[in-house]
Length: 360
Image (cartoon, rainbow, N blue to C red; front, side):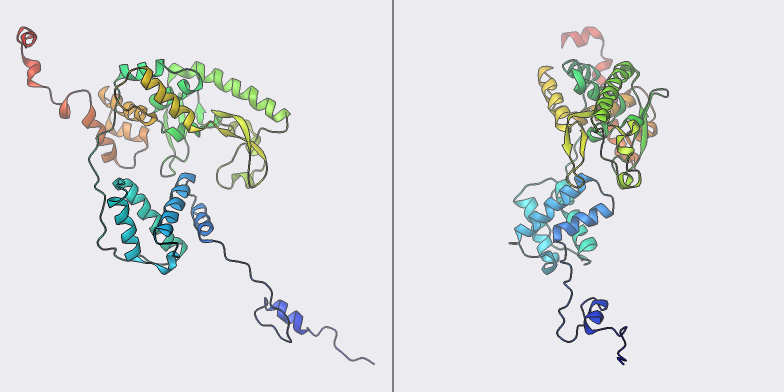
């Protein structure tokens, strides 16, 4: 009679249970999963912290430049001296601005602290780029009107929103249907700079045209649904939590792109928002046609929005909330560009009688 215990684990079974780390009798160990590449680790760490796509792109860019600057040495083999030489080179050889150098420094700090788990100590001898005191470019109300009058179609509507609500460029592009409240004349900015939400006003001057535009977007979305399309990207993990939400009307873009794209992860055909370069190019061309001598851009509308509100007598705290500034000192810069002369002081030449002034 065979008394062998059929339930006795074999050497191979023991090896499998032990994860291939302790094998006997010549049994091959289980293959260990390969460690992700460094830049993939950086991307995973950024996405785990819900940083923006632009932050991810910028950090990966600077980490690449840091590695190539040191002849493709692994960052784990380098420390404070190598970081210092790289940052100094940006200032002395690259002539980058202070904000650009700080962005590169933040990317390297993130790499070492959150990816490699190494603490960066004091970095000595770094040549820092000078941070000049610059005033924002502000258009007068007449100049704003001239620029907008030389625009048409969708870019014109978006430009009025930039100026009328103080929106940043990407805040305008990222607007969804649910963020527009016509009954309260209000726009909700979701996940703005610093991942903060805020409210701003909806200009009544474009309520009718914006309503017509949204109705056209609704018709376009309905046609997409009939074709089995109609999906948009969802923020964070909402796409997994609510799989069908991306096809629902409230989540659609206010300013959708004219064409679909295929998501690289899911393979689903979706519609993206209008690319920001369309609006940037339209504003630049309109400023040239309007013969505006100032370097006007999309962000100039936001600067003009804040300045014109202060000129109209609105409280600076109100303007701060509308702009979404964390500190009122950031908003204070607009008090230096008010249309009242230097520091809001009246020129003594204005007190001269008109006869004397006309003879000058």
